[in-house]
Each structure stands twice: as structure tokens, then as C-alpha cells.
Length: 458
Image 1 (spheres, helix red, strand yellow):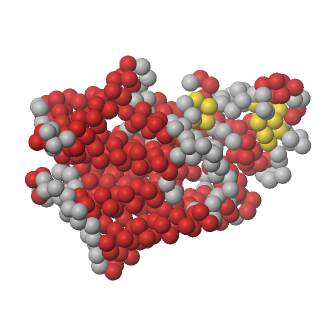
Image 2 (cartoon, helix red, strand yellow):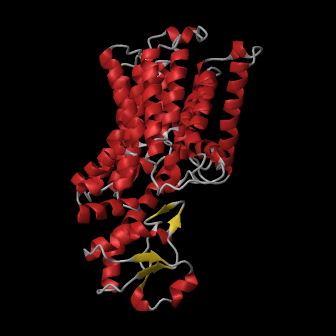
Image 3 (cartoon, rainbow, N blue to C red):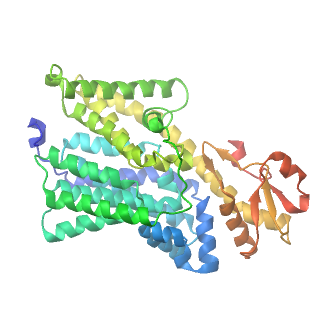
């Protein structure tokens, strides 16, 4: 089936190198404040560093991770085994990966939409603060690599790379994306088919490569499923993807958050009506089509998490790593709708959007920074308080979590940090199951997480 002929699709679809460079430069520029504030290592980062210290570089990801996600195994070996506990270097790597994704995304969108919309959606994606874990958390580097692989593979599909070299490149990029983070698989398959239709017809050599490699990767993942990745027995409510992209995920709490949610849904509704209803179709434009495509991408990007109860905020906002692209497309589609009324309104809308989302980004950067300081302090503080480790160290009274950001959530990661401080893998650490249990534990066997926690000030 061929897509409808639309006049704006006949324009030059390839972005100029300058526009592509602009998108990459803005992405790097947005990363600078966090790099200046001070990156840190949190949660699972310490578990991987513990594995490297006591078992070698190739143990960074753990044997189950190597089996389930070989791509992540390689990535963890590099970042934790070779680079090691250097959070600034790791954050710089994430910034570069983010900029690469932004550039590829702009060029990919430009194969279907006008350059203004392609660049605009990419820049909106860059400033949206609803996937910060993929920008600041070293353990999410495999997800950042998955983004690059998926965007690169789909760009080659959109450009109709049918040569043998092109098909091999598509296959390798798809493999990297899928085996680094399997949540990319549904989006890659759906997007490859949609791009073929939007470009005038599916060419099965390139598209089939994406589908075939994705399905083969799925079989591998099912056969080598990570036992630590527990799943829910019931379907999880993924409707949070909507406010995560239109409401509290990107805007300050309160009236602005609620207004954003209404506006986002309104853009999708208007766009869908104009694209679907024949009576309204004469009023449609590229912005309407981008908004509808973005809404679909939001949903497809959330589908892999139907059985994972991650809140898409803080450490859990990695579930937005592809859905956020759809959210950015919706917002850019809305701005284009306004532009068709008056270009000045679009400029005002874009300025207001940035003005509202940047403070949220800064606040969340601060949370990650404080969590990194708390995590780095834990091991030395425990060792100072308990020079000779008891048989078991109890931490409490509760893990400190603010907006789903924490130094440590799981006891194994906190244990790893303490083991590194003692340089002893035999040290046993766990969280108290209740404040009462913590209070009942003798002082020489417990450590109060509230003693110097910066996150508590938040």
C-alpha cells in the first residue's frame, strides 16, 4: 500500500550538515550544566564496579546480563571495566551518545517530514526532561547505545539502502539496538514498516532485515531471559506514558502540568481528526501527521513495559527512552499547527515550552547529583562508623528516594558500595524491613542512612 501524495514530502528531505551539526551542538550544550554540577555513580553502578574489583572487567555486567543482553555485557565491560569509577568521563560518553541520537533522529524524521519539523522535534526531544536516567546514569549506557543503533538502522531503511553493505549495516545496527536493550524491538519493527509506507512503498530487503534480526533477537532473549528481571503476572497500566510526555514528566507540578496534559491531548485529538476524518482532511498538514505518528510511537514505545511496574520518573524514566521521541513529535506537531495560523505564535509557544521544561530538568539534575554524593559517601561512612564489619550490617530505617531518584534502592547495590569500601566481598549488607527492626538492631550492627543524606534536603 502506498502513502498518499503530499506536496511537502517532495521537498529536499536531507538535512544540511549545518542543521545536523546544530542539533548535535544543542544536545551537547544542554548536557553541560549537569557536567559542571558534577555527575555521580548511583544504584547498580556500584554493583558493576564491585564485580570488576573482585572478579575482573568481564564480570561487570554479571553472567545473566551477558547471556540475556550480550550488547550490554560488552558495554558494561568497557564503561565499568575499562573506564571505571570516573563519573565525569562516563557522563561525557552519555552526552556524546545523546547528541548522536539527536542527529540521527533529525535526519530520520527529515526523510518523511519537512526539515523545520524534523529539526524542531529533535530539539524538543533534547530538552524534554523525561528520560534523564539515560543521560546521567552510567548503568543506562546500554540504553543510550540502543537508541543510537535503532535510529541508525531506521535511517538506513528510510534511505532505502538496498546494497549488500547497506543491508549488513542495517542488520548490525538492529542487532546492537536489540541486544543492548530489548525494548527497542517493537519500535524498530513498527517504524521500519511505517517508514516504507510513508516513503511510497515497503522495500523488503532493508525492512525485512530489521524485522528478521529483531525477531531472531527476540528468540535469543526469550531463551536466555534474565532471571533477575522479574515481571508482573498482570498487565501494568502504561497510561502513565501520557502524563510522562505531556504532564508531570516534563512540566512543573500544578497548573502548568495540568495545562500541558490538556494541550498535549488536544493536539493529538485535532491531528487525528484532520488525518482520519475525510471532512477535515483538507485542513491537515505535516504537523497533524507528525502529531498522530508521535502519539502512535508513544504507545508502541511503552508496550515492552506492559509487564514491568516501572514508574516513568527518576530511575524509572528509562521506560520513556523511545516513547519520549513520540512525545516530542506531538509537541512539534502542535507548534506547526499554530505556525499555520501565525508564525509568531509558534515562536512564543516554543519559548514558553523551553522556559517551563528547563527548570524541571535542572531540579532533576540536582537530585541525581545529590544521589551520587550520597552513594559515594555510604561506603566510607559505614567503614568509619563500623571499623570492623559485623556479621551483617543493617541499613535504614528506609532507603531514601526522592522523585524516584536514590543513591541506592536495592540492598545488593548498597552492599557492593560497602564491600568496595572495606575491600572485602564477604561483607553482608541489607536494608531494615521496617523502622522498628532498624531501631531494634544494636548500634554496632547498623548504619543510619539519614546521617548525611543530601537527598533528604530535597
